[in-house]
Length: 68
Image (cartoon, helix red, strand yellow):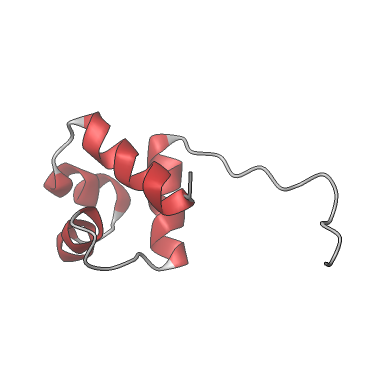
């Protein structure tokens, strides 16, 4: 799953209104609405805010991938 899919699922499964998410995270309603409707991606700083709100953690890899 991509980070985008994870965050969209978090929003959908939370049953929290987009207005409430906006109040709690500072991510503006129009950006949230376009994101949920798959019309636009989120900037990384906004995705970070949503990830923090929903408790999504990004774990860095333990080893660098070898170039192919």
